[in-house]
Image (cartoon, rainbow, N blue to C red; front, side, top):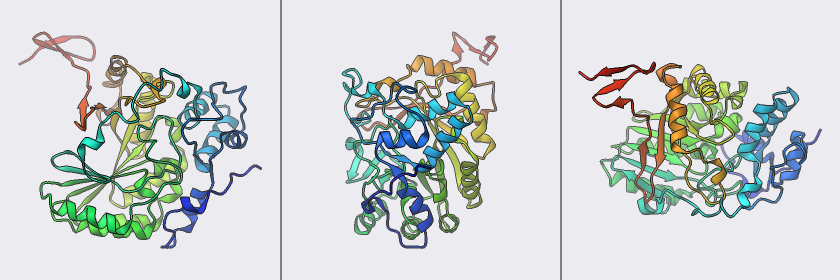
Length: 371
């Protein structure tokens, strides 16, 4: 059986702390499109849209490759293609139309307090704590800043970030982002959480991550222990999901372990053309997430990004999708539909409006007067 190559040691996070097993899994990644195609078991004739010489880096974790191969071998062709689109480069990335946008459309530089420190709202600060991911998504709006072999913020730089937080007593919510913050080693994570828990004003620490999806072996007993020892802050783990076929048994186990650590789990769902752009696809994903204890939190509108315009679903179509999902599933399973705004202005709600004239429209289309 084909096996993926071992990645260069420069991709390796600090390996101290007894977490070698998941780091070994992390090193089992593909950086070559053809090798990944051979491993998963398909060729260019089957997926004619695949670009073997992409403009942006390709990186695929073996856990995701195994998931795709299992779907293909199990005859779940549609599910396989949906997952493949997330990670394999599309020829449309090279088109002039797809390349007319800036590298990032949210203007995070205008919200920067310092290198890798951003404040979009008065009570929240985001720390970009590393620059690498287990696998690289083709739609990512910060893919020019992250890679499969990026760096981690050093201890001195992190300590400086913490001191900046101490100087902002109005900040109650800290978002750890990247890259992927859960790719810090267990020993590094313990240090980060201890320092964060010491900041007097903080009550919430959020992890913006895809690791429980792409590298579920990372959710080690040591990580769970570190998260469970937070005293002042509550940990919220927002996991990126795009399709119901991502929710296999390993993902469910990872979610269960995080819940046992006292973490509150949510899902960020990017709205993607060809992956989840129908009410039935989104409904299936949201219901399945709720069943494993992950509440669908945000449905994210496409962010204009260089080389990614083919992912865009128009807002009106997105509103129609979320409107049809609403009322057909539990309210707990309906995410907020939001769009990132430019110039560091944060997000805006795109929730469908049910007001009609002086009344309000029900799911069945009946208009009732507002009282």
